[in-house]
Length: 210
Image (cartoon, rainbow, N blue to C red; front, top):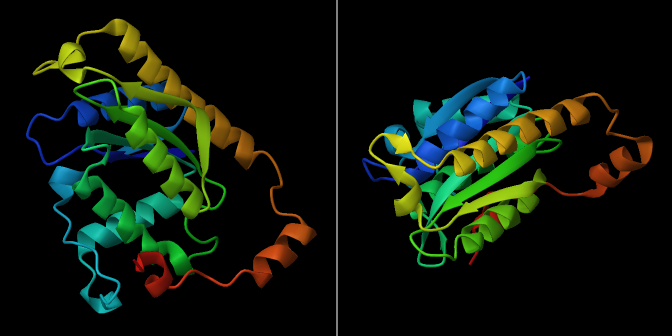
């Protein structure tokens, strides 16, 4: 059972990355193996629907491969001007390359959502992430962690509010629990297979059209 974390920002000291690391600790406590993708370290080029497969960077290939292998995901973004950060959204845009995998995109994967904000509007970033989860055919767990006034919670040493830290670990454990629950069930039925066969894969043009 693997849980992959994607998040952070281009800031050298990222509260959302610190939060993500703690949530992954919770996933490990729940019995999952974990892997972290820091968007700053990934240094991904901007996604383009016109990119040729042969030109896809190794960092993108690795990200997509690990996400496809994972049973659960944890996403963390700062709140920038009412939504998720551009660097984090760019990482999610590259998941378009999962369109031809079997199953496609985030089918049957559970996702835990975290945001950090300087003020009190972090839920706006969580809502945006939930829309993306749905578009990629994943399942967002009901427990979400929007962290307000992150400057009070995090410093250079990490988190110094144990209540928030435990909430993050609880989210990690919940993602692992839900992923195990999904894995223990036969989720695809003949009716679902027939319905899926009638759904045309999302093209890159459709996914990125304005």
